[in-house]
Amino acid sequence: MTLLVISPDYASHLLPLATLATAWRERGERVVVATGPATAGIVDAFGFERRDLRLGRGSNPGVIAPGEQPPDEGASLRGFFRATELGALATLRYQAEERLTDLMWDPVGRAAETARIVQDVAPDEVIVDHLAFSARLGLLGAGTPHGDVVLGHPTALPVGREVYGLPPAWPSAFDPDPAGIDELQHVCRQVSERFTEEWNRAASTLDPGHRAVADAFAEHGPLVLYNYPSELVDGDRRRLLPPHRFLGSARRTEAEDGEVERWLASGRPFVYVSFGSFLSVRGDVLARVVDALRSIGATAAVATGSTDAADLGDLPSDWLVRDYLPQVRLLGAASAAVTHGGNNSVTEAIGSGVPLVVLPFSTDQFAGAAAVEAAGFGAVLDPNAAGADDLAEAIRGVLDLPADARSRLDAIAAAQAARPGPEVAFEALALRPSATSAVIASTSPAAPR
Image 1: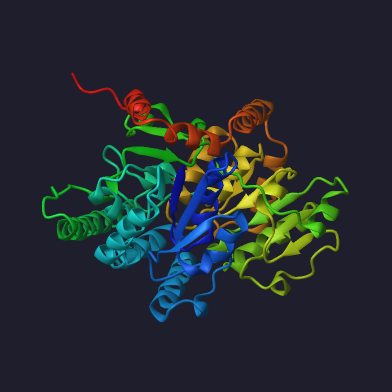
Image 2 (image 1 turned 60 degrees about the vertical axis):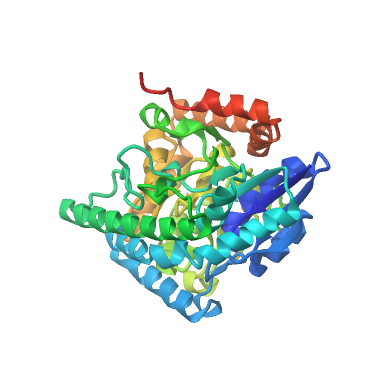
C-alpha cells in the first residue's frame, strides 16, 4: 500500500500532515511526500520518500525570514507584519487582498504536475492540505479520491453563510468597528468571487467538461479530515459539515533533545511560550509576555523564533530560551501556554491538556481563540492592546483553571491519547472502496426531505 501526502513547502503545514502519515509508516506501508525543497529535511527526518512539488512562491523550513524569500514574497510578508501592528481588521483585509496570488500560484501548471506525480506514484490513498488549492484542482480534475485535510480552524472550509476570511466569531477582548467588519466582508466577498473565477478558469483548462462552482473556497474532497478537536465545534455548525472526521490533533513524536530533557528533569512547573514560525517576528508582544511572566515569578520555556532573545531583556537563568524548541514535548509537561493561536499550537496544547492564553493576530486565529474561550480552556487578549499587567492576570487565571474546565480538558487529552489523530485518519482512508463509501455516507449531513 502506498500513501501520497501533498503539502505546501511550509513546516507548519507539513509537520501535521507527515505525522498523520506515520500511521501508514508504522504498518510498514510506503509513504511518499510531494512538497517543495525547503522542507526536504523534515521529509527525510520522518523517513519518507519525496517528490518535488512547489505549490507557492514562498517557503518556510521552520522559522520565517522575509529576506530569505523571493522578492515578491518577502515584500508580502513585510506588509503582513506591518498590518498586524494596526490590528485585526487591517490584518484580515491585507490577507484577503493578498489571497489571489498567495493561494492560486500557477494553478494549471501545479495541478498538472500534481496529476503527473499521482500517475507516477500510483498511490492507494492520498492526503492533501486543503489550502493546496492548485494541487486539489489536479486531484479533483483527475477524479483521484483523497482525504482533504483542513489544518486550520474548521472555518478554513466555509459552510452555510460563512465567507472565507471573515471570522464568524470574535473573542470577547475584540470589539471590531461594525463599519470595519462590513468593509472586510465586502472585500472578502470580492476576493471569493475573483478566486472562484480563477478556479473555474483553471479547472476548465484542465477539463473542458468542468462545471463551474459558485464558491471555490467551499469546495472540498470526498472526505474532509479536520485537524481539530470536535469538542471545540458547536453543534449547529457541525450539522452543516461535509462528510468528515475530526482528528483531534496530529501531535508528532520529536527527536529527543538533551538540553530540553535536562531542563525538564527539575520537575518545576513552567509556562510554554511560542508565537510560531511567522508571528514570532512580533518581538514587542513577546517582550510584554516575558515581562508578565517575570512579574509573577513564573518559570518559562520561550521559543523566540525570529525575535532576538537579546531584545527581551534580562531573562532568568532558570528559563529555557531558544529560537526553536520541541513544542509537543514541552506541552506534554507544561502547566500553561501562551500562543498566537495557530492551529498546531491550539490543537497540540488541547491534546496535551494544557490551558492557553491566546493572543490572535490573523486569519483563523480569531475563530480558534473564540472557541478556546467559549470552552473555558483559556483566556484571550488583544496582542496590540494587552499590557504586561493584563497578561500576568491572564496567565495566573489559566494556571488556576476552574475544576470543571480542567476535568473536561483532561478528558479530551485522554481521549486523544487513546485514539490519536493518525489512527483516525488511517481508519477513515485505508478502507476498501465499499467500506469507504459507507463511512462517507454515515458522516454526511442529512439530505433535505
